[in-house]
Image 1 (cartoon, rainbow, N blue to C red):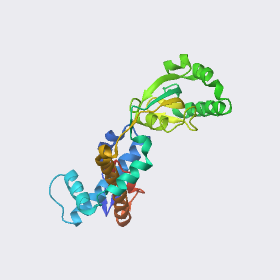
Image 2 (cartoon, helix red, strand yellow):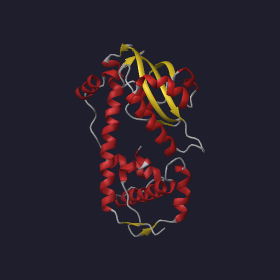
Image 3 (cartoon, rainbow, N blue to C red):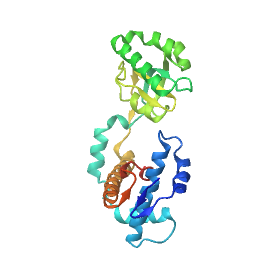
Image 4 (cartoon, helix red, strand yellow):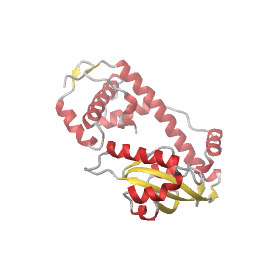
Length: 248
């Protein structure tokens, strides 16, 4: 494929082996090339710094531990996050909701479905009272027969992306965009909210600190990868270090 890192060619066999780990990606070959090249950049940097013990993964982890260091989140930062994200720290919240599902199938590819779903969303934005009618006509979910109603949903009951969108909506609000999940594309409307109890800050402080620490580490790591990629001699491919599954 004509790809080299720091003067060393990347073998096609390495890329072919990596493709197996990216079959769900939109472009498995692109993701595999990206991953193999970035891994080579990291291993070269580990070698430059004298990190030689263990497997390739061990050396990369040791490199990150040495070079990517961020401070612990303090109590003030955790409290600011808690107060700014108050809706997340409740237990027992329920949301009555309905949706229209456009399911991806071999006979209904994603782009065709997206065009249809966008047109139905536009129709609902103009005439929201048609939700039940259009759910019955277009939804690939059994709920379509009852106007798309999903009943009352608790936090965590749905897939994470659906849950996150739903609980950001106000009662009666129709989402202004399509939601994509592994089930397909959804048009989502919140109907009625039942508020639960507030979780005390002390109960979730450690959880918040872990989340903030992880966010800080991810940002620092992305910056570090961009520096390494910019410094390396990479031929045959353009690399964006921050997008790698290595750092997810």
